[in-house]
Amino acid sequence: MNENITKRNELLAKKVIKGLESRNMTGYYAATKEEALKIALDIIPEGAKITMGGGMSVREIGLVDALKEGQYSFIDRDNYEDKREAMLMAYDADVFLSGVNAMTEDGILVNIDGNANRVSAIAQGPKKVLFIVGMNKICNDVDAAMKRARNVAAPINAQRFDISTPCKSTGSCMNCKSPDTICCQFLITRYSKHVDRIHVILVNDDLGF
Picture 1: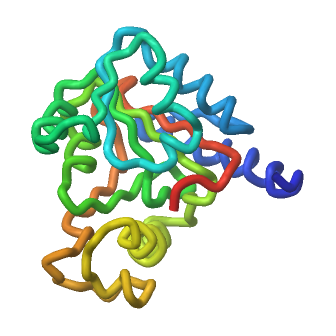
Picture 2: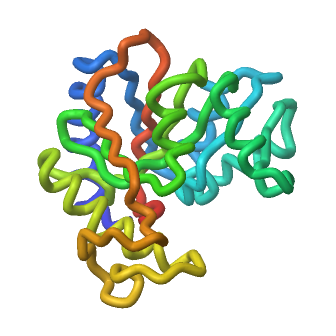
């Protein structure tokens, strides 16, 4: 990555981490995907029961592959015919892995969900929640984060599925009420009630969408 962008990301990450700390959450900065993977594996104890939503960023740093190959109990919902059964296992997991749709400079996380399995697990259930966040997801404030989540993340995410939504055909949010909408639940995480539950690894890269 361009050294000027890297320097900017390092400085911005310090601000974001300070914001996270003020919200009872823990932040880390990784200069590379490889460093992010190392930090994640340091946080996750061997033998832990782990599950996740559909986060692309988690896969992009190689974390899913590392967990499948290591001494962990990784619940891969793709291996379950009953997806609901796999999703429900998240609430009793030791660690839940996720990306974010957007995040503010002062440490607020914004996520949109269709089935709500991801946002509900972020809010309650798993002992720890570990977010992998590319610096491309950082926005000035909550309004900007919501706009990014709705007009960037959601329309791109919609392309992955066999659905018919306005955002899939137009590329931007139409505030639809389509039966296929993937924007059913909005979660703004502004504070963690429980110490050491939410961990955020900021990565000096463009991850996810």
